[in-house]
Length: 594
Image (tube, rainbow, N blue to C red):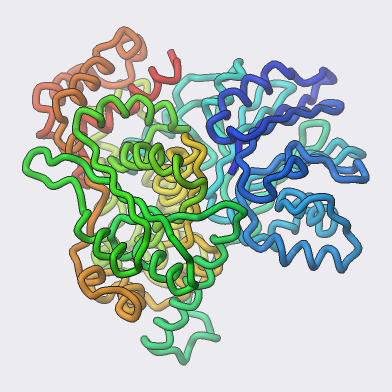
């Protein structure tokens, strides 16, 4: 919905308003409809606004309550803000606007940091208490909206994107070896609070951080569903689970229609996005706009799935738009997509989302997307293998199945100074899976995927690429009540029918069979997968540039081996190894990191 930024001083000095302005300028694409800056004492806040709810100037930010007690900046959407507004009004609060931002301020005044437990939605916010000087930072349960942090002695800065913090200046841009290890192990995912830069961290999802004027702080994690079977669902059979999931998804989709502007759908033609379209049609949505993207074939691989998206669009009579992208457009769009990345991301559909968002933003400001269903409902092909072993054996099986490389493999990829002494990525997985609250091996894997891998890969992709064009992406499969229900669902119901079994049963009630029973699809971008000419040229330029040579991140022999056979080297998960290595270097150079 927006971009926020700010600075807190702990050394008695005034905040640097120039730095906050520079952060705001970098966030302009996230909020092209308005800008604002506010300062008081040791704190300054900046905001860029995308008008979605309350289109008047009364919804402008930074926003201060009428009594002058609290000022805040907010990014995202609280879908139940109307219900909360009514509840807060009954408790004596008065409102000057119809915005959800004002509801956030009043909710904090009423419930303190527990306000987040009342919110259904995606959000990141910063609130300043005028009387105490205390600052409260918070992020939604699934980390759909980002919040990056850069701390130096006497100062903390925060922003909706990592490049915004770089624009403010004075950031330690040395590489974090642990984060690079994760990047190369987990398909470019880096778990919070780390980023690949030592000087930038991110607030974890479902976390409230209270920062005191002296710089002391404490974090509170306010949500983590249990991945166990629950007593209230003990008597439910497969049909009852199907109906419960359908009702929860119906509610999730309906919530995400809350807007003062039209809401469209990114329609791939797969099960997940097609379910969203069907449920919106069921709700009576008129003139629903849907959007699909496809790419030219390369290496004998098709690059579009229009036959499925067209089928769904016809079935539900949507106003459908198709975007066919030629291969040479992929290479020219690549630099724009990388510039929009808060962190390096290698999945091919980054470019797809970037190009699609560019076109979609010309017609609507809000879209729903099917991201997250595969992690929440066990849709990927590797989940049956992860479910085969005991709970105790799961970390090892997860590493064998999911990791791009082993720690040993990384010794021939990275220069010695960049390789941690121990398998830090494997240790993270073991510690995460050892935590109580996951009943079976699959439960432990799904908890890790939903609350770590999903947040810092697919979810981040949707946010970064849509917001690069002032487009708000909403993800109903990450409605926290739906996630709680899916976490309690028996693993066998999710694994059935080659994955997402319970969701496919939902689909069979409301979708054409051809869509439900089709082979699983992805956003294919053959020009990247097969290193088509212009893409390969961009890769070579980055890896042989003076910056890459000076950085000395990768072993020269390994890079030479990849460049000699660009399409031959694959990670254990099948990703193009050259692309993964090159993308990190391209991202560093794009963002001016020496």
